[in-house]
Image (cartoon, rainbow, N blue to C red):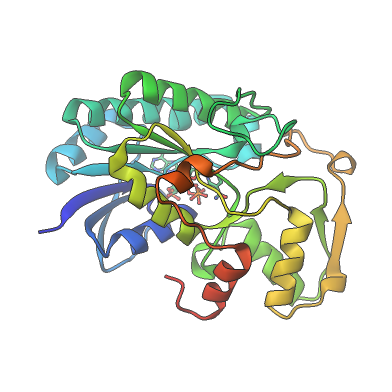
Length: 294
Ligand SMILES: NC(=O)c1ccc[n+]([C@@H]2O[C@H](COP(=O)([O-])OP(=O)(O)OC[C@H]3O[C@@H](n4cnc5c(N)ncnc54)[C@H](OP(=O)(O)O)[C@@H]3O)[C@@H](O)[C@H]2O)c1
């Protein structure tokens, strides 16, 4: 009999990939909130994770053997302008979920972000000092600390910028970028903003493989440190779209209320030593194009 896995944020971008990868080995339950999803191999329920009573009821009904917490307000600009809401979802609900999982003594994985760093150094290890620049990064950083304080056996996975299945990406930069190029429109991409960009399927596999190891804070990212512009070139070449449409830009020329770190690439040696084996960007793009991705 398969064990039961509960995935919060199942209706989101990462949740799409987690559900599909997990369904091979787990009986999967997912929470969505404002979006409905239909995935035959999982039971997907509506649950606002800020409702503590509803959370408790669902845990009693489902009796999960493990939880991956991928629900978040992940829109940096929204968090910057709606601090209280961001705190409620990204910090308080995370704290509640960690507490419930600690009481039940079941594996709990919190999905965090590379944006807990200020981007001045790059290739960050798990031991490097955090210094988030944005409200979103700050709240994810607080949630990390609360999670480990409440439940020292929990896992915190710091994730990079991800791309993935086009079906899952209606809201993502990757989907928007591809659509822009397909319409023949120019795309401005930073040549001075670096991330360990990775496919969401590689990340989902990594989270699932490490979920029950309780390895504390772990960086999951791709094997390459790429600027958004370098990533764009790889995508355009792979999808046979005109690279002349890509325009390299600099962060300083872009006005925004949400501060953006320059280089939040991640050192993934700890994850690799635990068995993490992410695809390169090109390998993952090939899988997406082959329709064998999820
Ligand atoms: N995508 C990336 O490149 C990236 C990079 C680094 C880290 N991460 C982290 O990875 C995780 C997943 O991100 P994502 O890109 O998949 O985000 P996303 O596509 O914006 O999805 C967010 C998910 O959270 C759910 N959610 C939001 N508020 C909720 C609430 N009050 N109650 C219940 N569910 C709620 C949403 O449900 P509804 O849509 O149904 O309302 C949705 O399923 C997050 O922890 C994020 O910080 C993502």
